[in-house]
Amino acid sequence: MNIKTLVVTLIALVSFASVSANADNAQKKKNWNQNHPRRHEVNKRLNNQQKRTDQGLANGSLNQQQANKIQNQDSRIRSQEQRDAAQNGGHITKAEQRQLNHEENGVSHEINHDERMNKSAGSAPAAPAAPAAPTTGQ
Image (cartoon, rainbow, N blue to C red; front, top):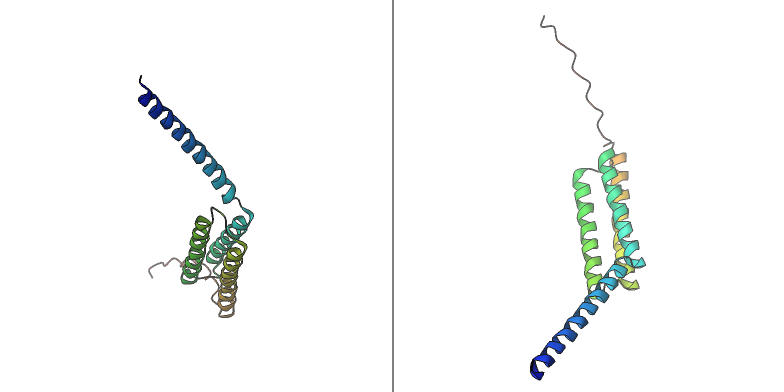
């Protein structure tokens, strides 16, 4: 093996080791940042609002159109949180957290408003229909 081949092999090994170490560090940082307190708080609120929407649909306090609108808004907030985190090395800043919370507050107020309006309008879920009485044909 000549010197030139040995040097190229050595450079390749050092480069590979460096890339492997950087990938490992990036994975550790990614895992830590996914559990960052600000991201966790924002995502916990989004998950809670999803549960509220599902419950509202189930008990009739929200109709499908209202639930769809709320879910679309939450989806946009979740996408914004992910974009913010991607731009900041996997976490969100305090200012971004405040903005996301402000947007979540608006959606939360909308859920409450829709439920109150539906309740006052008497659009509670319809009772199941009673079975029809059998006819004797006479």
